[in-house]
Length: 352
Image (tube, rainbow, N blue to C red; front, top):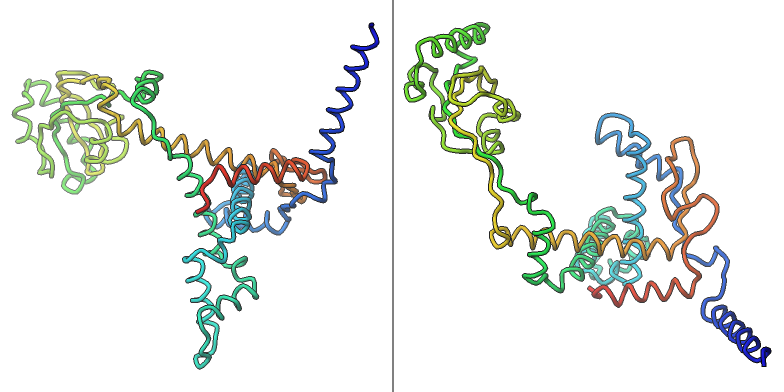
């Protein structure tokens, strides 16, 4: 009696083992699509970063450039697998334009003939505009799929309730300012500002009489309540930051702006209120859409990485290994699983 259950257990194990081998056979790494990040490509990315910033990229920065290049290459391959390099109208126009530029003026070739020549020359693989278009279309396709089902009001309310402080309105300041012009006072600007501050304080001059003590300015002396961002837009970067610690209901300063120096009377600081979720519904929907699109792109790239063997050629400037990439060994799924994953991706994403 005790042998029967044991026999059935072993038989079931053997069935599952052979079924797994039949459905998902173990294949060699060489059967995976291979994406190689060559030493030359890494050098090109490093040079592009240097030209962009005026300095050599740090290992962390170069690592990010390599990751971005791999992502784009994976998306480009997927776009080509969908035959977009032949069917996309933007790509077609670009290739025809290139070929007409190269062709003899008296050569009456049709657009179809020019396209055929462009593909024969593999121009669709080397033209940077074509590559960028195909990558962009893949990203837009993924984003479109992610935004098919908009969130319900209940979902938006839950998103708001998870972090209501994120939507708090900015604090606002109501102030009166006296402007002293750099052009008018030159090197004596700071001395003039300190002398005027002493005079305003000593004689208890109210903010309503401030205008007559300063130099002409494009803004009025008394300003309505304004956020730090609004003040920076009017007076220049970092202006509002200097006001955060100034006392209320008295003259203080001087504070520097893009136009000179200012003496200030801070009437009040208004704490920003937290609105109801309906008041920020557009912002909530925009945030939900951006998060959904980013999540969908990460998912698509993860699927493509798992289906691809990624190799990074070692070199002096090669950064730390990137996840799902190795110098010698293959990552990714066995080929049957790989194909199943890619097909699932194409079902999940719209075809165009």
